[in-house]
Length: 273
Image 1 (cartoon, rainbow, N blue to C red):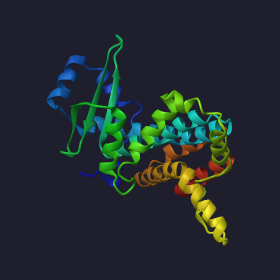
Image 2: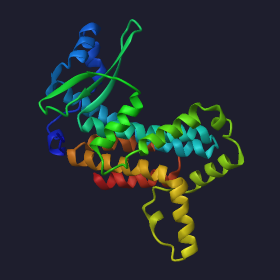
Image 3: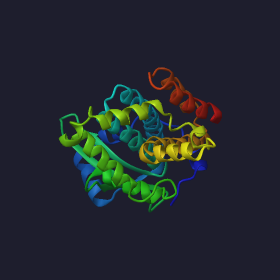
Image 4: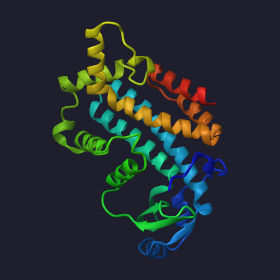
């Protein structure tokens, strides 16, 4: 059951996170509630979900800019992981706006609990559920189900595999300063793949083919993250979260990154204000 932008216009974002709501409850009761499918009225969690949507979008943009900065330094393996988290944060933002979350509850005694919260079956209540399986897998698959028009089936698996290879697999990470990685880092830093003019024809078939191949081989990752971020920014504008957009602009002003990339993002946000 989709949640519309109109619905969120009546919600005031909280300054707290979802896990703080559960930290105020007995862990065993929370655990039992997840096992039994306990429901929570939507007005209890809506403001917390909206706050987390804002924070996830901020982090997605910050990580996209961090990716550009890191790749400039030829830290190719870590740049791949950083770009993955730009995706991961924006899909969590959009999932919060469509009533879904995986929540990590870290209790003060050192124990923890991970639960899923979903509102897909009843628009009046959130339902607690046990979180089973790999959380990243679950989040991507849920996103593909909720937003089929924004992402192709299986693309999440590709990005998860890429992150795993370059972040954990010594075979890949050890090649971070090899010729191929240095070349990839160079083109990713030099080229602003989120520039809307990048897609325009340059009038020379050979040059156009080169840039098309560059986008297909390298730039689609950066451009894809930006496409999802733009969708989230538009939803924020529709909802009326202009204060959040202004805070994101302030974040961008404090970050050292590609000035061309910062300019594209800044211009897009200002155009929504």
